[in-house]
Length: 341
Image (cartoon, rainbow, N blue to C red):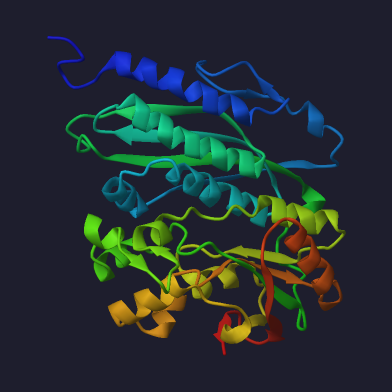
């Protein structure tokens, strides 16, 4: 008896590492010390020594049950982008610059080409965020996961000068709310998606004129990474007073997280286009509108609060970064929360 007969193929693990190296090296930053394969990843902080109070910010998350969609479509090169996005967008919300990322893949059986495809997506997400992929773990766990399934999670670390932290403390009545368009469902609410829409190969490969794509393509579209857009706003000299990453819990849970006591966000539902995938979900599942806005991003992946005098400059900076911004509402006095109108 040996480890391979117990279900763990060490040679496949070596092969996976060799295949992923080409993707990992494209994410390197000058601060990375050493290469892939060590027991830990090393990252020099010398480039940030001139900050007044350098502050580390971190984020960790996974892809969730969106992975079930990847299994059905046998498409594994985009979920890594989702994983990175869910972590680095949270860092960007605090005003941070993502520095490095680590991934964790747990699988029932190590298929090196599949693992390399997953990591290629992680590397693409890191490139979009400007972060280095400095390490990770691939755990083969026979009997714990089915052979053709896996889980994917990650962890990111970023940095910001303490004086540049986005806390929401200075948000006040009259401030403008700017939303940045999402790419679709992103990586939240897929347990409900899978209840509403039949997840079969035939259904997922059906083309819908309303979506402009197959259902599968619309659903697996990766989460937007907003790091460059938020940096562009900062570089334009605009102070972002508050920032909310619209993830699980939708508008109702996430927008209040950036607000101080005594003010509320008023969002106009008709101020931006809602992607058709959400209308399909709402209709097919007979889901109430409040529940839709309490579960999904409904077309806005980020919401920012800025001084009204800075709104147009912020919009221009976001467009320059390749994203689509909309003025979606204002801040009013009142009990902390969100009003949709």
